[in-house]
Image (tube, rainbow over all chains, first blue to last red; front, side, top):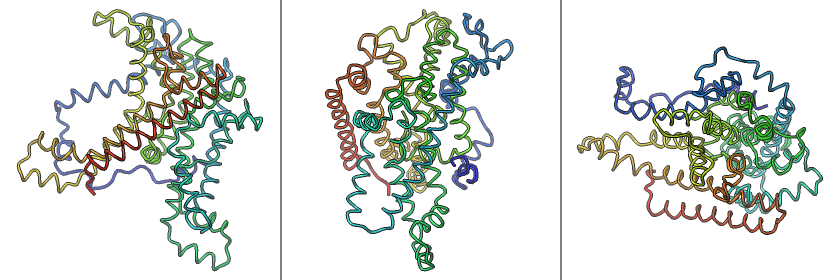
Length: 298
Length: 186
């Protein structure tokens, strides 16, 4: 679902006419300025860890454990990647993570749309109070409510199942808030016309509102995806058998058992990042907007 | 630049653990080239703490850049032109036009980074387990180890409340400073 909304959305575009004439001239000539002395080292610091990870993942173990370090592998060893897939329950972790992420994204899109629409359009007793309460939970860090959430999930009997990872993530205050704000900007007349034609609330939501809300839904999807895919603390406390682990949790186990084969660890690490990176480059606009609006990380 | 922001903290930590490896790590190799000995980054209390700090900065800086970039693009050209006509040089322009107009963004980033730093956990769990000794114990790691390793859930829940109060205080500071000291252009 995420993929579809992301791909059909128009590509990332810079605002036209944002560049000052002077700036443009400078860029066209591409002169060396003293600023480059500051910017190039910063760029290197940002880049080197990633490049080094890639290099290590393509080396043989001998090259990895060579001092001084081998800067370029003799011949790139792509078999490291297939080795990872064969050795650890890596494929299993990958599938688990995909299941959890897809379910969470789908759940968030559905439930946050329903709630957001109710808060935006339907008048009912206590609407504002409930909405403010939901907003207030945005201020509470997850770590604060972690213990009670754990106890609830435990009473539901879902500890050490994928359900423990999915169910608490099915809806979130952020999605409700963002969609409510977006739905309010849509013209009411469209809905009224449909209602007069006999459409129910639900079919108004699914046939009129949702098709118009692509960007907002994509933002919610991207944020949920990123959060679920990268989450570590919650899986750590709810999952203990290797078969039900997610990638982030699995990677730490993998690090423990393969401490010496750094090349495999780096290959595993890159594979765990690939979906995020892929989606990031496809839907950069939504990532940046989503992250800028929540400051979500870690 | 922005890519580290979307990576998980565990993935980042794995990369840095390897970069900072005492025997085969790239960083120690570069240090040895300039005559500094191999350094066990996670062996000393301050080394471990600042390694985690550096890694966190690496992971988050892209976010700060995006926010500042948006803020810089939001500076009205009319103000810049007016200052130019009044004879402002580069430094004066930065000090009196750019910096004040970046106030809201700066305040937001300071508060957000503080709140995020209070929630630090993954790196500590993965890299140091709070060690050496208790040098890298952070709030959430303490909470985690009490509730899920030592089974003292009540005390851990109390810590969670302290964390909540600290977060709320930061938000209040943001509101207060925002009203008093920060200039909002619009």
